[in-house]
Length: 327
Image 1 (cartoon, one colour):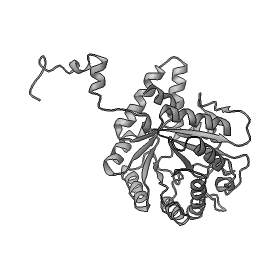
Image 2 (tube, one colour):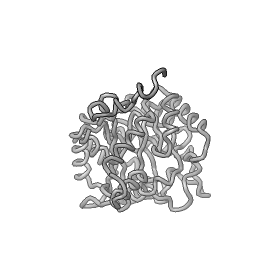
Image 3 (cartoon, rainbow, N blue to C red):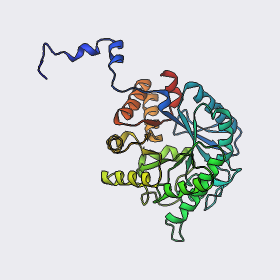
């Protein structure tokens, strides 16, 4: 740079809203956003989630309405999480054709399937009575390879119910390959996989476990989710393994505390990169705003811009419909 103050005045390009808008280096679009939705079996009215103000456990009717509103706002996609009335050790409801998630996928696909991408979370924790992401051994450990068989069956059930993309979130070794093979064998070779490739054992998930009713009944998930203090190389290795197994897009979760990881992943891969602005991130902003400590609308937008600037192509956020309307 040759010019210095007083010739160089960077404030010139910040002087008006129009100037700032014209030179903005990061732009959010409604189609970048994916809305997570919870649907619960056996309830007559939507049930508010106390730790996530504004988020509810939906009925079949209300989830269709929420999906329609998201589509009208221009949201790019939605991801469904199912909460069954009955849970067991193997999560039998997860791949039941008449289970709540498959029923909701058919409902929502019929409602908005041509307007946005309908996808499903492909995991077991919402469906097991122990709250863990897989099949347990007699000693209480998660059996990686036995769990892969369940994930494969769940993915096929979801694709059959109308899910246009499946999103395995359990962080089992080999999960993408098992799901890809099962989808291909069942005639769903065109169904893409959005892999939760880099998912940390994070304290930011607390409110989600209220919403999905999936808190572990014992222990935690640190044996399969990544250590927040783990080396960055571990995250990149997980990404490469999932891509080699057939992932079509990859995800980093959570977002706010892992912006550096999002950036490195974006630099490493040539597929879409998603980031999940998780329940704890949502709850902190809503709680601070409710106390009058922050400007809610500005902080929501600032947090999403930060995730986008870090390199995320897609952002899963509970504010997707609200923000899409603003955009």
